Each structure stands twice: as C-alpha cells, then as structure tokens.
Length: 491
Image 1 (tube, rainbow, N blue to C red):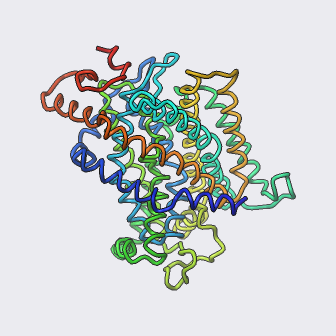
Image 2: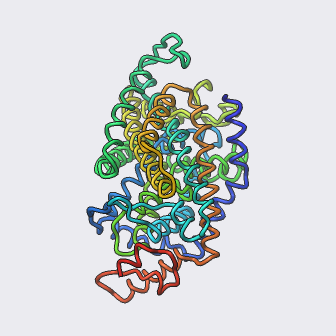
Image 3: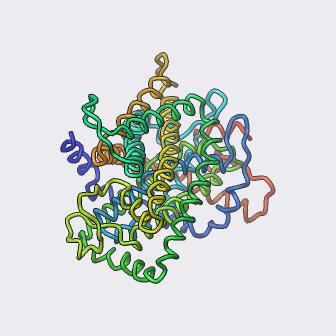
C-alpha cells in the first residue's frame, strides 16, 4: 500500500505541478500589480469590517474558517518534513510560494464571491460553482467537486488526524497493543482517535454556523499562543538567529538535499499549509457577507501571510535554531542536525523536540495540544468544503442522506489516519492535494483568459475606493461579467 501511494504521490508532484503553482502565483502577482503588497493596509481594515447575517458569516468568521483549513498539520509537521527532506532551504521556497500565492488566493476567493449562490438560507460557492457559471463547463465543475469530496472527505483528513495521534503518543507514551484489526497500535492512539471522532462529530452535525463560531475563537488564540512560544525560543537562542537566516537563504540555492528537493518540498509543503491555489479557501470565502466580491478576496490573501509567514516561520525557526533536525539521506555532520535518523521526517517530532530542548517535557505537551487544535479545526474546514461540493452536486442529483454519508466517511478516515503511519497518511494527503490544486489552477487560468472577472472586480473596487464611496456596490453586467446571478439580484 505504501509503495503504491508513494508512486502515485510522486507522479502527482512531478516538477510540472510545482512550477505551475509558482508560475501562476507570479503571473497573478503581475496582472494584479502585486495586490498582496499594494492593498496590505486595506486587507487589515477589511478583516474586522464585515458583519454576520442570517445568510452569511462575517469576513472575520470566513477568514477563521479558511485559516482553520490553512493553519493545521502543515504548519507543524509539514514544515518539519520540508526541512527534513528538502533541507533548510525549503523554508525559503515556502516563503516564496506564500508571497506569490497570496495573489492566487485573491483571485480564487474573489471568483468564489462573484459566482456564489444562496442555498437553503446560506451562501455557497467555490471552484465547482465558478467553473460551471464562468467557464460554462459543467463536466469540469463536476470533476472538481467529486475529486474534492474524495480529497477532503477521505484522503486529506488522514494527515491531520495522524499528526494528532503522533504528537499525543510522543508526548504521553507509546504502549503498544496487540493486533486490533489494523495492526499494532498504542492505547493512547486508540483513545485519541476515539476522542477526536466524537468531538468532531458533535460539531459537524451542527452545521456551518457552529463551525464558524468555534473556529473564530480557537484559531486566533492557538495561533497567537504558538507564535508567542516560538518567539520566546528564538529569543533564548538570539545569538544564533543571524546564522539560521543565512543558512535558509544559502541552502535555498545550494541545498544539502539538492535544488529540486528544496524547491519541490518547499512548494509542496507550502501549498499544503497555506492552500493558495489549491481551491479549498474559496469555499469559506463564498460564505462571507460582504459589499463587494474583491473585499473577501483581499481578506483571504491576507490569510496566506498569517499561515506561512507567521506560523510556518515560527516552526521553522524553532527547529533550526535549536538544531533539532536532520536532512534525510545526508550525514548528520553535514546537515547540522543532532537527532537519531530513525525519527520520521513526516511526523511532528522535530517540532516537539525543539520545544522540549528549551522547555523540557512541557514542550512536547504544548505541541501536542497546539497540533490537536490546529488539526482539529482543519478537519472542520475539510468537512465544510466537502459539504459545499455535495451541495453543488445535489442541484442536479440527489440521494437520501448524502450529507450523513459524507460525515460518517470523514469520521472513519479520521479514525484510520490517527492510528496509521505518518508516511502513508502524508502520501494519501499529497495525492488529494495534487488533484485539487491541478484542477483549480488550470481552471482559474482559463477564466483569466476568457474574461478576467477577478481582475475586473479588483479594478472596480479600487475605483470606488478612490472615489471615497460610503457603501460599495457591485454591478457584474456593467463590468461585462455574466452569470453572477446573486449580485445581479442585489441591484
């Protein structure tokens, strides 16, 4: 099973997809005139300006739901994997994909707002909706919807839950049971899997409002606590900081693990973490109640900064500055790490050991707790994305209890992922991520060349902002944007 997954995963992440993601981010940065830099102040203002309504959630809630998907295992175990397999230089490429990806996040999230719909009293939208309405290709929309349901309902959840199980086991022990039908697993993993499934089930059966209210509290608190902890560790080793920064930049272009490995793992884990271009963020963006589609696109672009430049960087600096890493296949004396090479690079162990080296046993426990909340909220986001794509499909095809089936399948995947090996879970996750990202990137590039709806929306918003309007409006037909039915009805 592991060998098959590895081969399929490697095929998905051939250089073509990696450079397509980087190239698309650069392209949209240029055509938006680097909106991620020019509009940074406006992103911050918009973050707290929207309000929740009966039909939609606020901009901040949409950001929290989106961040719950972005801030997860990728920020802790994913960064460790990028360093462990791609070398310290992979961190630089994570920064690059975040900076360029912010423009991609703007485009895909603005498209989600332009083509959103009102469905049973709440807003729905995402790539399947804008591929249908803007591209006019229902088959492509269905392909994305089905692929996404499989990815976020079955494949990607195994990564998040596996990291929870691995972190808890490392923090509290690894007593192994006999064969429980799924191989030898520890009591602590079984208990963790059971707890996560019960807690997750309680929230996802409560709907999107319960998800939004939970994530808007948990995500900011845990992200802030994690960043504060990492800053403390960096300060404790402040004399080593210049050398670590120099190591990241020098290794980015003359890497220990080879340039292809550094770029590949930096981009792969960067996209896994910040999700820019993956097509997952637009689902939460579409649910927001805003005056103009570009507003939520800007907010979602800001979320990429929070995820990668803040949280991922915090993890990277902790691991590197405490020297708690090694690069797979490279001699420890060359890689700079001091750890035994039997530690799985795809696990959160590097991060836990970095904290433990400064804080003792509390470090492992803190990472386990942080990872639980980060991964748990990501699982909530995954369910919401799956539900949205089921909602798209059931416009044309219904079967009894479809949402219940999705919930049960996701819960089963979470339990399985918690007790399985990290490499298998990450391999499955990479396959799901690759399919979603490939379909979404190709689709939004076609949309640009077919009509540039997201760019037109940005120019319209900037014109109104320059004119100093008190209330923004959006007239899609005046801009030459067709099939934006929701916004046309608001006029």
